[in-house]
Amino acid sequence: MGEPAPVVVVTGASRGIGRAVAEALAREGAWVWAIARDGGALADVVTAIREAGGRADPLIYDLLEIQQAPRIVGEIVDRAGAIDGLVNNAGTTRRGPLTTITPDDYETVMGVNVKGLLFFTQAVVASMASGGAIVNLASLNAFDVLKGAGLYAASKAAVVQLTRAMAIDFADRGIRVNAVAPGFIETDFNAALWARPELRGWVTANTPLQRLGRPDDVVGVIRFLLSPDSQFVNGAVYVVDGGFLPTRLWPL
Ligand SMILES: NC(=O)c1ccc[n+]([C@@H]2O[C@H](COP(=O)([O-])OP(=O)(O)OC[C@H]3O[C@@H](n4cnc5c(N)ncnc54)[C@H](O)[C@@H]3O)[C@@H](O)[C@H]2O)c1
Image 1 (tube, helix red, strand yellow):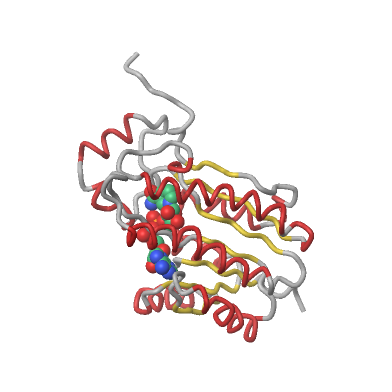
Image 2 (cartoon, helix red, strand yellow):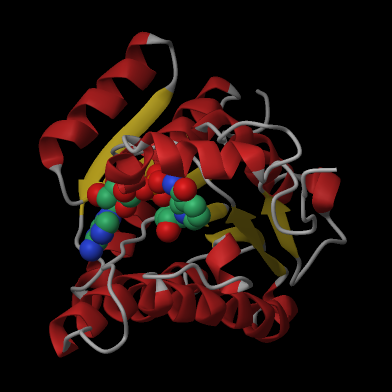
C-alpha cells in the first residue's frame, strides 16, 4: 500500500484563489477539505474535483463563528484522521477611508482575516498529530497601504505578524507556518475594481510583468510551502505580485 493521501484543509475554497488551490492540491492526490460559507458554490467545487478524479469534501463554516471551530475540525479528524496541511485563504474587505469605517466593518474584516484565522488555526493545530504545514494568505496591502484599503491593510499586516508568531509557537510540534502575499489577482474579491479600465491600466503600467495576476499564479507558491521541498522555510512571506511591490516604473 502507498502513502496515505495528505489531508489538507482550504478555507474560502468556494471561488477565486481558494478554489484554484483546492483543485490543484486534489489533482496532486491530496484529500481536500473545502471550507466556505456558500454551500451551493462549495458543492460545485467539490463536484468538479471529484469529476476530475480527485478527493474532496465540503464543510460549510463561517469563520466569524469561532466557537464552532473545534467542532468543524473534529468532523474532519473523525473522518480523515489527522490534518497535514491548512491553507488559511478566506478573507474579506470593506473599503473606505478610516474616517468612515464603522465598528461593523471592523468586526467583519478583523473578525474574518485575523480573529477567525487565529482561532481556526488553533483548532487545526491541536489535531496535527505528526507535524504539518500552514499557509496564510496575506496581501501586498500588508506592506503598501492602498488608498481606501486601510482597514484591510491593517488586517493583513496582522496576518504577517501572526504568521511569524505561529512559526515560533508551533515549531515544537513540527508545524511550519508561512504566508503568501498576493498582489493584484483577478477574482470576484475585487471584480468591481477591474471593471474600471483606468485601474487595470494603472496596475499593468506599474507591474514589470505588465498584467494582473490570476488565481493559478498564486497556487505554485502555496503548493511549495505545503510540500517537503520547503522543509526549512518557516515564518517566511512570499510576495506574488509580478514585481509590483519592489519596483517603481517610470516613463524612461
Ligand atoms: N484577489 C486579490 O487581488 C488578492 C490580493 C491579495 C490578497 N488576497 C487574499 O487572498 C485570499 C483569497 O482572495 P480571493 O481573491 O480569492 O477572494 P474571493 O473573495 O474570491 O474569495 C474569498 C473566499 O473567502 C470566503 N470567505 C469570506 N468570508 C468568509 C467567512 N466569514 N467565513 C468563511 N469563508 C469566508 C468566501 O466565501 C470565498 O470563498 C483572501 O484572503 C484575500 O484577502 C487577494
